[in-house]
Length: 182
Image 1 (cartoon, rainbow, N blue to C red):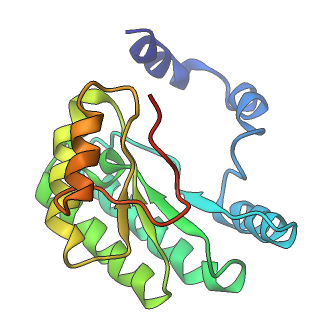
Image 2: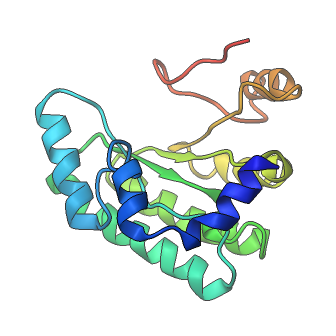
């Protein structure tokens, strides 16, 4: 509930105040700033993950715009970090509007990322989107071996989802990527 109140109130907070808080966690508020941060971090020996911030789009055009921004980022990433993982939120690609739209847009991103040998991580959002997220992931995983899915460690169902992953019917993780904790 608190999460919903905070989320609803964010548009009322001045951008400079938000940026003061977010600066520590967000590489930049546009693609060139994010790419510069990725290049700097890679130069210091760190791995990187690129996430185009956003979620819960309200219409198809917004989902398509988010996908287009990811495509622009994918075009620019080879120049700064060949190993950067791309992280995608399901509701940013329209999961709540139309799961088929989300699936299509994510498939296109996975295809573009695969051409670069790049991995894509499908993020997990709040509990009501778990089933839809996993359904889209399962629909695409066989065609896109570069696609992985994040699991929330604190849901009662996560252990079963992880077992399904090990059996080949759900999320997987690459060697050295993340872990499940109790």
